[in-house]
Image 1: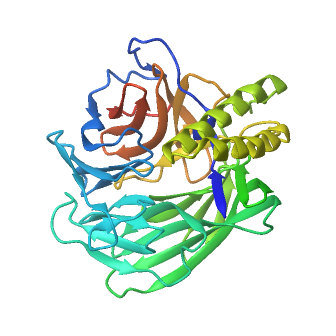
Image 2 (image 1 turned 180 degrees about the horizontal axis):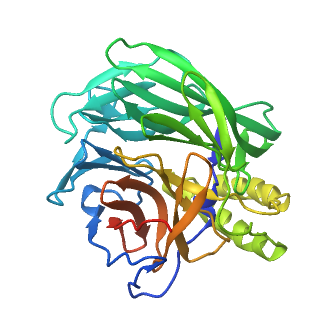
Length: 387
């Protein structure tokens, strides 16, 4: 059966477009100019949607079906690591890269295994085969280290097979030394609409419906709701901390925003079919399904606050987040999110015609994953203090 899973969250709905010149940073506090910008095109990566820092020095980078690169942040040099396959150090799907104090690695949903390597990406890999079915019909959303453990958040498809579907998010803990795997918690995942025609089937995540984010900060694992604006602290079991409260009023979505959202989804769909080299007839049939799904598409009254989140290893409790914005917005706004749920905006920046799909906080700034038709970069900017 042909299946095209349209995973459309706010990152796919918001295009960062502006003038061709690099503008200054607009901040509530002085932030200075951008200090680092590293191209990743030489590593064969044209889009970046995953970032992670290992050993405080090595930036692990990956993109959809595009492999892995590791960049030494002290020198700016880097290299592509691994290759497609099923042997040691190989992968069929780089579902999520992660960085630890003494290692880096990735989760592979198709091979259903976790691979660790030296932080630099060199040396002999070590892989753990996960229990059968753990990643079946699922997609890894987050992976974070804590000592000898790796925490993995996996979104799994729910029922039914057509109509409206509500997925679930399960959080697992994998112990590297003992190979133990424990289920820690479960949360509601994304809501999707499904449509099928003969052997064809596709699903569309509803706008601003995104699975929760898993972030490590202050030695704790924090779960950030991206559809319901809530924060949980994971210890032995989840404890709801507080609703996320921003420092400004909720922003409403209107009917005029719907065409922008639909157009963004259609463009994503066309790009996905092109990358998978679908035949013209198959594309026409899938376009019919997407047209039907888009006709039933609705927007929420207001959009949730958090789109992306990250925290440096030495964080004292605050998480760095990228806020959602109106469809077609040209801004990327950073804010700090306390465990109390209080969110304070600290910086907004407009980038010229660039998509921003991932961030990674470090001790001296925030790294952004960016790309457009001309290239792909990781860029670091200083992080100002919240007011």
